[in-house]
Amino acid sequence: MGEEKKKWRTAISFHKGHEAYIRGYKLEDLVGNLTFTEAIYLVLKGELPTEREAKMLDAIFVSVVEHSIAPPSVIAARAVVSGGNGLNVGVGAGILAFGEAHGGALEGAMKFLQENLRKNPEEVVKEYLSQGRRIPGYGHRYYKEYDPRTKKLFEIAKELNFFGDYCQFALAAEKAIAHIKGKKLVLNVDGAIAAIVSQMGFDWRLGKGFFIIGRIPGLVAHVYEELVREKPFSKRLDEEKEVEYLGVPPRELPEEFKRDRR
Ligand SMILES: CC(C)(COP(=O)(O)OP(=O)(O)OC[C@H]1O[C@@H](n2cnc3c(N)ncnc32)[C@H](O)[C@@H]1OP(=O)(O)O)[C@@H](O)C(=O)NCCC(=O)NCCS
Image (tube, rainbow, N blue to C red; front, side, top):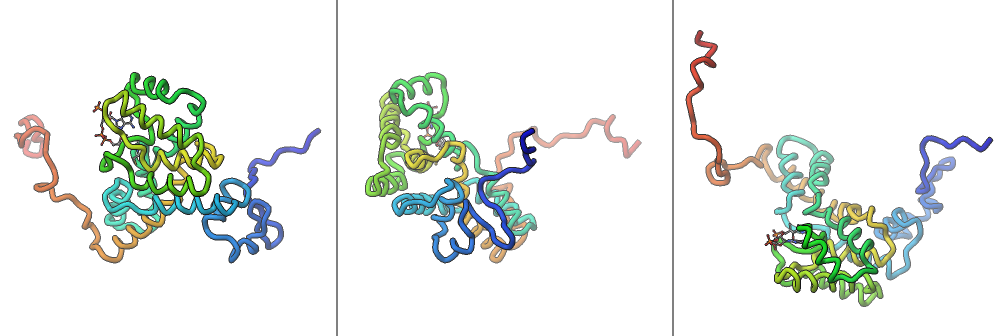
């Protein structure tokens, strides 16, 4: 009879006596020797990165570290803190706001690229658009000509030799969208990161993780700022200025419901 499998299994780390081992390396040996990005690569991929892999991943994290007070995640994080909650609750709320249209597109973009890489980009785009589906990694609320973060990341990817099939496919699909739709939808930062991390051999199911890891410092900074600089409950709407009421005008409660006066 074979050995019974234990209920909890992991290939990431374990403890032996007082020592913790991460992917087989003693934690104590990693501290002071690895950069944070190198350690993240090790935890996610299971192996130590080469110098160019570490540089590329580092640039990716910096590209998403913060992007103004405007996005839903920051609004959610600051609103929740304003309700009287602490730092961990605010940051958690910010992370919960990541979705298909914000941050989460990275996963979809990686899946799109990894599933379609060997196909004709024009055909793939045609199929998506004819079904009225949005292609993750394309389009941006503000950037209509190009996403400056994509431009910069692709320059670095070229220098570090990560500008391969995936980046080329992503750009070919951007061209095809403009051609078929008659409107440019830029390859956004999620699409660019998706192409590069796919080239680096990461699985699409890790996609959201890159954005979460990169954006947490920005969320922590916003939540901290809200805690120390703003009054509790400051994140409420000015109904007159900011809210358009679309419901029925004020009206009388029907007599039969005025039970307190019976
Ligand atoms: C980011 C996003 C929400 C911006 O939306 P937006 O401001 O409404 O986009 P635009 O005003 O530039 O374009 C609207 C038109 O393009 C289409 N469109 C926008 N993004 C599209 C996409 N990724 N794939 C296909 N069509 C898209 C819309 O359906 C709409 O078409 P219509 O004019 O025929 O009705 C949108 O582009 C999107 O959902 N992209 C995919 C998700 C993504 O990559 N998010 C990460 C952003 S960093």
